[in-house]
Image (cartoon, rainbow, N blue to C red; front, side, top):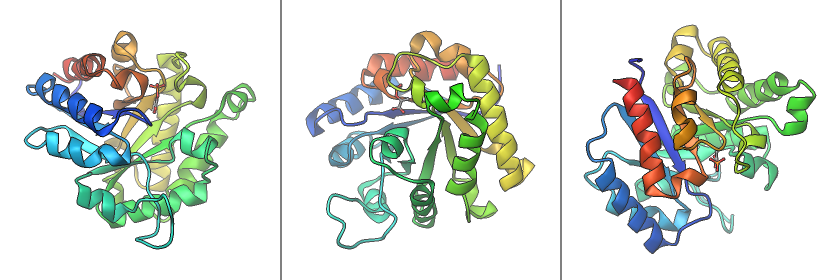
Length: 257
Ligand code: PEP
């Protein structure tokens, strides 16, 4: 039992057409209607955002972008700006997801520019960090995650940092079916909180929510979420099915009441 407010995100990645996304949002609106004390966020592909926002009107489920550019506008074919996401109805934006970092080569410096722009435009960043398997095996988890946090959050003021959500997502656990043990996840979450205390302040670090991501599913959600420093989950595969995503949200709700 805890009095913290969990935050559960569903990252739909490059799945669902606008019609399929609207249908999933409709299902979630009904299934989650009585859920209390949990923040729920869905992250649809950009082209699905408007129909999903429309469907989730009068629902407490919030909507997030999956990525954005750091410039306000310009000749950046294929990109989307913070202002566009905000105007389309997003409250959050996922930044520095491991697929952006490792498939598309995003650097800590680029992620940092995005974090600063998102905060300036009133979007709450879901700021993702996490080590690769070879980094973990080489004992570099803390140095990699430490650099991602320090460089990714450089220049963020203490006043604006309250809007941040951190997601620890070990790359080897994303989409692989392999979940970090609750012990490993808790150890890294505690380390991230200590870093946040150093970067910002101990008070702010204790308030900031750190999600775990990496093959979270209904069967392992409770064991992860019951750990002291795990304040939520960023769910990929299991969020595509409204039933399994709802089960994960309910696991959080049960732990918070
Ligand atoms: C993710 O996309 O952020 C993620 C954690 O994916 P999965 O739950 O499928 O591992």
